[in-house]
Image (cartoon, rainbow, N blue to C red):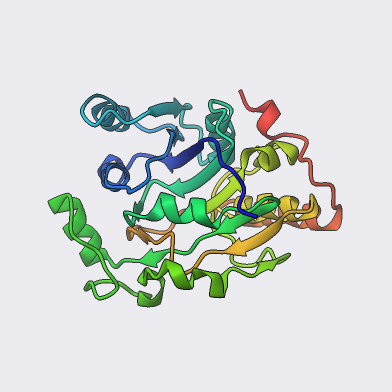
Length: 266
């Protein structure tokens, strides 16, 4: 039975790329189904990001909250926890601030939602040339045949066939928080993201692993919930090994509530 979702929040993580965030929010404006709330989880950006948020608040009347923390290095887990503490919406769709959404993105995710499941969406990768064109022009229609797309199959939007790929699993493979949806109650149950993660890597896989340990299933979303990922330089891998150790500890000691997470974020 399809669950009833009272309200949905879109959480957008960002750091110092206001031109990308503007493209993302522009794609939100064009949604066939609007989120009830938008939370921009800002990991210490300069003032230009706040100005983009305020523009979309004032001009487009989007229901946005700008949740900001000082820049003390990559602390995505902490800022996501802080952002979700600001909402009471019962369903959360999480994306990165460089993901341009298909106009049916929110509607597709709401159709895919099921109790005791989190939904892993996919992304369409764009090359540097197409990304530059988008940043310069502000908008370019995107589709599976657009030049500059690397994995075209992920750009196919056929939601009536999405059920063919929607098998529920207990696998934590291929977890990417750039296109992820979950129930707020499940998020709170596992105490959200682990604030101990700093720097890029493993924070989303560790979070999903704890959801699975708590009894949730992973559901894949294909041919729906399409999102286009802007090209950018890779993040620093400086803390990757330390983060992997934190993840391994979670797998060795299955206890789905992390000690430093949602409730400790302030």
